[in-house]
Length: 483
Image 1: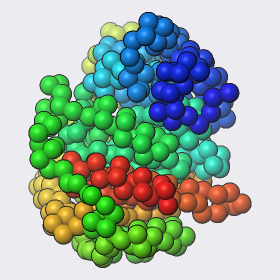
Image 2: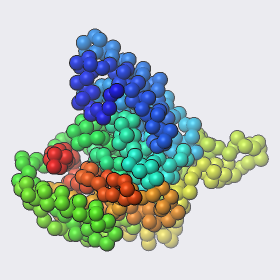
Image 3: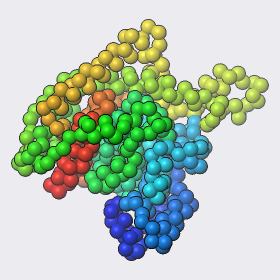
Image 4: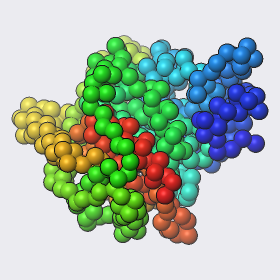
């Protein structure tokens, strides 16, 4: 049995012909099938597609053709990222039977590298949530305690990697949707700088905040997968040229050159005491190794959650207007003779039944803040505050290289515990949202466990870097892993 393999380990197995791509793929498919009955991390198992890809990799090896480091690696894909010819539901009834007509740019890049697309994973509907409970296909369970959530919205991807139902996965992060589930499932999750990875082929939630990124078992795998999907894309005008990236990158020669900022606003009321202890212990260890640690202030971060829940719903309202019950997806027109229904009837009934509660809530909130009389009072003020939050970070990075914070304020919570209290649920994103508001890169790393109800639950540490400085994550992340 092939278990807990990393990207490089699979590459070595294939090159030494100690296992074939088909054998590896079949093993992961079986594990995914068996465990999914219990965890519900997968919406679509792409069995035939995956085996066809695996045979192509084996054919290359048989002909002594050099393969990429990612060739033959079983990958899970969040089900809001398009793979041509495969279902892409965004975990919503309104797209329950939608078949993608083209590849997302990240998928196209990975196809060229001969990655094996194993399954499409569960998520909160249209990536709206922090627990993967808002899925039309039912909630995903946490691998460490099945009575608890895996985080969201990329909970299916995180649980699949944590349980070795895939070697690694792709997720999307709008307000913490890669980092928070990575923390809850004890894996690595990377949210890139806005513009580093193309959003083309990602079902849009909030276009100025969304980013695709990797969820992996370790930092090295995150680095490999990130480098494979990053880059300029003509189909996404927000992506940046490589020369801009190189111009803004920072280099750290040794740990003794590293200057770490610890924001006092992230260690106050609401943070679980056991999580705070673990984070501070890890910071102390880095300091003992020679890193320079200083307390900093990010005062406007306290407004980030309020800003996020004004800007994000406004963009949701605009982006989800395309799901009208006419062009594609679920439609009530099928339930009655078309002569009996006006366009307005079809539109309202299709969206009412096709969207879940949280999606409808955010559409209504976004429509409200964009409406006449409230646009200036709410939306424009939120845009101004967004600039102040970004300015806080820019000022901090004048004196430091990295910021370290908790990823989440609490350990994984019980399924059903917060689903009926949106404000409590939204507070789970309090440490991750400021990063998206400012367009910065951030990574969550597992650093230990806290005990609840007799189960050990993972804790994540969040590292925030200046724009385009993902390279720092890979350097410092590997040091933290060794600790």
